[in-house]
Every structure is written in structure tokens, then in C-alpha cells.
Length: 59
Image (tube, rainbow, N blue to C red):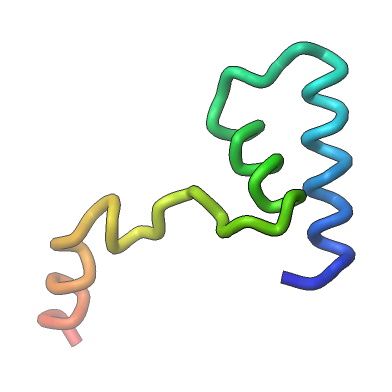
């Protein structure tokens, strides 16, 4: 992720903090990325492990 994207996430996190909207996954994701930590959002293979296997079998 480049600096421009991190800056956008920082703006999102800061705006959400100003509104008191910090008890949700979107805020947690924004804050983590803005702070330089890994994106906490699970990738699709973690959410639906069988999806990749089915897609590979169909190919």
C-alpha cells in the first residue's frame, strides 16, 4: 500500500474518531492501516475456504 492510500485511511480514521464512530470493523481497519499495521480484514480464502477449491476444480 502506498503513502497516498495510507493518508486516505488516516483521514477516514480521524473523521470517524471525531464522530465517535469507532466501534466497528471499518474504523478498526482504517486505524490499523493508518498506523502502518497489517490490514485486519480477512481475505476471501479465510472467509470462504471452499470457494477457492471449487473455482480451481471448475477451471
